[in-house]
Every structure is written in C-alpha cells, then in structure tokens.
Image (cartoon, rainbow, N blue to C red; front, side):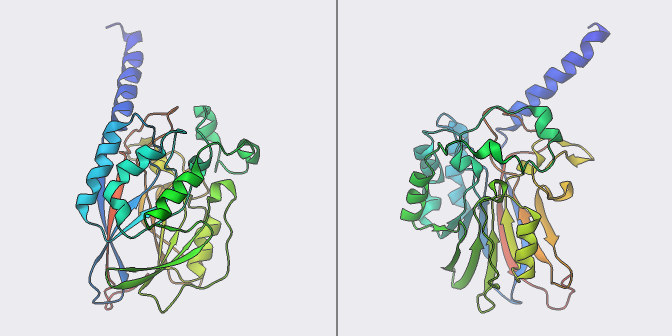
Length: 304
C-alpha cells in the first residue's frame, strides 16, 4: 500500500470500529455504599439515552433481556426517542421492566426529533447550552404519549416533581427536574426527606446548578445521563466533551459531588445506550445500562 494511503486506511478502520461499537451493548455493575449501615442491598437499573428508532432490533432485544437482572427499581434518565414512530418500540423493548417500580425524567430528544449537527461544532461548542434558538422549534416527538404509557404501567414521572416509592421494603424519596439542557429545570429549596431510607435526585443532563442544589439539600445519590460518556473517548485521555458544564473526568461512571460545607453526594452518570441517528458512532465508550447495587455505608470509615 502506498504510504499516502495509510492515513486513509487507518481512518476507515477507525470509523468502521466506531460504528460497530454502537452495537456492543454492555451491562456495567457498580456498588454504591449509600444506605444505612447494615442495610440489605438494593438493586437499581439505570437506563439512559436509548435514542430508539423502530428498526433497531438488536438494541430492542438486548433491552428486553435486562429484566433478567431482576432489579428492585428502574431509573430512566431520558432521551428515549429518536423517531416519531418509536414509542411502541420503546415500550416493547423495556418490556417487563415496566412492571417494576420505576421513575423517569425526559431529555431533549424525548421532545425534539434529531437533526444533523456539525461534528466540529459539537466538539468545540462548550456546554452545548445557551443556544436556546435551536430548541424554539415545535416539539415534534410524541412525548405525551410516552409519558402516558410509562405512568399507566406504574412508573413515576419526576419532571420538576417530587415522588415517593416503597421498594423492596424501603421508602425511597425522589426529586427530579425536566431537562436542564433545555433550561426546563425548576429547582426548589425543599430539603431531602431525612425520614426516608434514601433520597435520590434524578435529572437528564448533569448541569452543575442542579448537582450543587441537590447536594446542598442533602440528597445522597444523584443519577443522570445525557453525556453519552463523551461518545468519542481517547485512550488515556478520556472524553473530549460532556455537552454540559460537568467536567470531562466525570463524563460517565460513579463519582463524588459536593459543595462547600456539605457532605458529598454520590453521582452516577450513565454513558447511555444509543446515539443520534445522524452520528451513529462510539469510540472507546460502549453503549451501556448500569446495575447499581446500593449497600450500607461502612460506619467505621470516612464519608469523604
């Protein structure tokens, strides 16, 4: 092969791998010591950024199989849709998970159909927020149909709401916001319910204003998505962007978040399950669902 063709071949191979990785679905297992000391474990399945289209049969089958994990609770942090006709596919894919206790919030791609975006603009666009004009078009996806289907099956809508569930003999308190990426979030000053066995914050996009408020209000656990884990990650460097104001080091996985004078919260950011149909690539960032096993805090160790 001529030397001048090597870069072309390498780029083509990298692109082929990045496309193939979008179908390399995986379940990540994470332990979070957040319950009272001595508590029995609680299993939470975190789903995010499914970005479903009707023809994605492999993704739908993989999602149906997640019920075999037997979680106690499902938390869905939004961006379920990527096509106007995808609601039946989403419901079929979630399948038996909809019969379990669950909570959800919506993301921008539950409201707006995907559009082509400049890759350069995405990679250099900072937080991706503040471009409000991009979201002033009509909300053209059937989000109310999806909301009605979720709630009819028993999942709790947390878009700018509080909620409460009895899960595996524990009382869980929740706070949620509508998508901060769209500036739809409405934050209040209601402290976390200290009488609950656990209080959990749920958001689509992990913007710092939301994380800071919930940490200050005493929420020990916060779940979010939106970042796709960076979607394109460079080995030994990590995510290139988060598409919000969260730092790149926390683009996916379990981390700590705290504000001055407050106990740290656990923050889990899902790398998500799908991509926009217009950017069907992932690199070093496999699509994922996460099974979080919540356990008792070791009372003998430090909390920070």
